[in-house]
Image 1 (cartoon, rainbow, N blue to C red):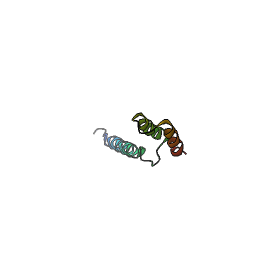
Image 2 (image 1 turned 90 degrees about the horizontal axis):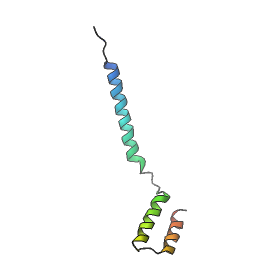
Image 3 (image 1 turned 30 degrees about the vertical axis):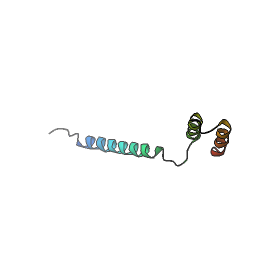
Image 4 (image 1 turned 180 degrees about the vertical axis):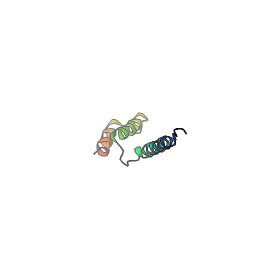
Length: 68
C-alpha cells in the first residue's frame, strides 16, 4: 500500500545511540590517562607560589623535577 520508513528510522536510531555512546565513553575517559601534563603541574606550582607556600627557587626546582 505505502512506503514504510521503518528500516531507515531504525538505522537512524541505532546510529544515533552508537554516536551518543561513543561520545559519553570518550568524555569519561578523556582526562583519565594517568599522566599529568606540564600545564597542570605548572598551574599547581603557580598557585602554591601565589599563596606563599613556595618561593621562586623552590618553584623552579619542583617544576624541573616534576616535568622530567
